[in-house]
Amino acid sequence: MGVDKGKKQKLEENNATEHIDSDLLLSIEKLQQAQDELEKMNEEASEKVLEIEQKYSEKRKPVYDKRNDVIKSIPDFWMTAFLSHPALSELLTEEDQKIFKYLSSLEVEESKDLKSGCSITFNFKPNPYFEDSKLTKTFIFLEDGTTKISSKSIKWKEGMAMPNGVDETKGNKRSHSEESFFTWLSDTQHKDDIVEIHDEVAEIIKDDLWPNPFTYFNNEADEEYFDVDDGDDEKNGSDSSEENGEDDEVEDGDE
Image 1 (cartoon, rainbow, N blue to C red):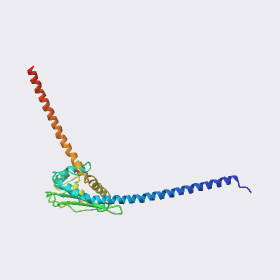
Image 2 (spheres, helix red, strand yellow):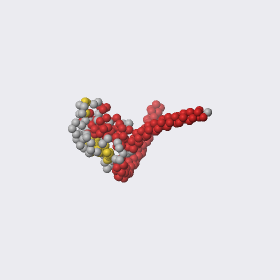
Image 3 (cartoon, rainbow, N blue to C red):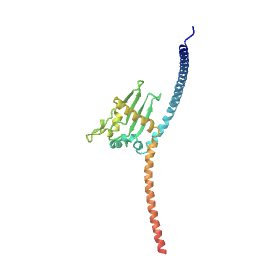
């Protein structure tokens, strides 16, 4: 008995489909193997990069110390750098700027493994605002993706405290945009929105300002120098005009 042509065609189609599915499955398996191999190599590369970063992190420390010693001889260096930074400048109120004039140095210290956290320390000269000589905020990155934040309360001198955006000298509640930078510095709340703000500010200081604060300080300094130059140019231009006028008068007189 012969096989029905319709059944034969359907059988052939099923065999072809099975063949295609088998080839596709084999290709996907090979692709997964290649991807796994790449991931393993990427992990190895990351470990090597981290080892190099750790090595140079130790080598950079004495240079950072040397840089801090030089910065201490430059008046209002850190305040100028903060005020010149497009993001950090928004965090300093007028009262904060007065306090920042007493800021002698800034230190950022990362964990030895460079990935589990960091601490940011502000060192102050004796000042009329608080008793502390240094204010430190520490960030520890936990395995579950959260951040543990710790800092000590600021020992404000009588009548000088500005907790939670309140200026005790005026007794007025300030808006969020006018909230003191020192509120952030001493705040350790663990609400999600607060933690995000902490991370953002800390990352800007650690990854942008700290590596090269001279960039921001120099921008402000350049603007001041340019203003002086412009004034000199105007003055020189005025003097030149006057001199030219005098020469013209002399020449006219000679004629």
